[in-house]
Length: 543
Image 1: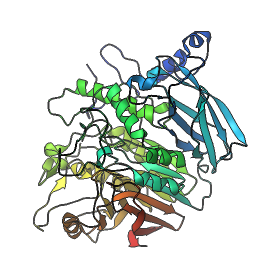
Image 2: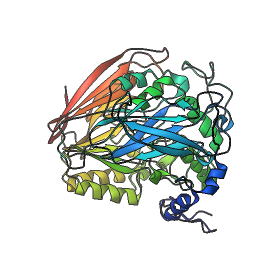
Image 3: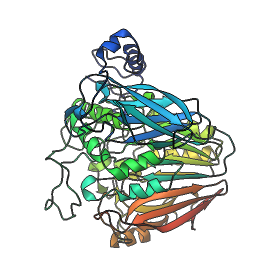
């Protein structure tokens, strides 16, 4: 029996069961003592696979860096010589993996080196937290094992918190359903050589594989085999492996450090707390699925040790500071949220959407965000999250209204609490970064969405998908309707791609980078539109 709080969530620090499951802190202490996190001791040596010989490239899933700090970042890989087979073709033994970090791409100046353990408990993934590096500069890293060397990745340290910074360039992307199109946008994002990339979620899709003829939307490429919807850890691991075999995705990971988040499809479509989309699933059973999904997500992402899941719980919300220029709050809008009111989906006149107890972040995360905003001295304050925060009414009739319960429109009081935090903290330059809906949007966060003349408390840039939704169009009939109905919205586009953000002390420029097609590979990228926010003036202007 799981012990839940009033929001139906399991606290990551105080998670217990009737059987006395230990807290997260005790779990991490035990992992370190057992050698899962640290490699040492004769007992471990007896369990090592020494002098490994691989049937194929053990680095088939690529390499990655992430969660940068002023003195370092995480570097990641996962050994998988046969990535789509059970256990990735690896034996159930730990393997030592060597790593190097250099000042140059040719590795003439190796700054640090060491070994990490690829353990079967984590699918032979390796997470190395590199520290002791100089701030605000690029480094290069690689792995080697069994006489095989990985590709080279580019990491980057952040400027020290509070230090003067002139410029920041970063990318925002996500939502990459395999069958819907090629991942060409990742290749273009890699060429930008961003300071970092924020991935807002939907890295994989948990659905049953789609075959040609199953739907009207074309199937650009088929997954191998006949996998059904995924539920177990092995299923999630194989799905991640399939996605990570994509060369364009690997190139984007190798190009820059990533700040990663998850949305719904890493677990289950439109899940909320311990509530599955599937009707009738008991919370304790959905917790098992969540635990499997979170473990697989951690295994395949460049995350720090603090994000190791504790059963169905994971610490995913966190804060990054980029000098004095930006404070970035990566939010979790799934794990602690209330169930979607009125049965989810588009709803008219849903009174339950205005219940004061509804939450998107949970009480603890709301308090953490409020405290961080009040303490911030950054020029720009960024909320990097998953679902649209602006109101979005889809009805053409001026007298009718219909909003979506999976977005912040389903938790109006929670949205107001965030707006109140921004106002009370006197945040003049708030920028919300969002994904989820496979379309490009730009708009203003109004203090009162019913009054177009009310002040803007910030702006929101919604990035489209990498491939989800297939080939799109610059404009649609529904897009035109929603722009007319929602005067706080300034832009709509229904093509695939990513966003490029260029930030200085005086201005923030957002570029919508789009592809005409994703059902064919190697499509070119263009900039469909650009918008500017001037510091101290929370509104949007065309660039």
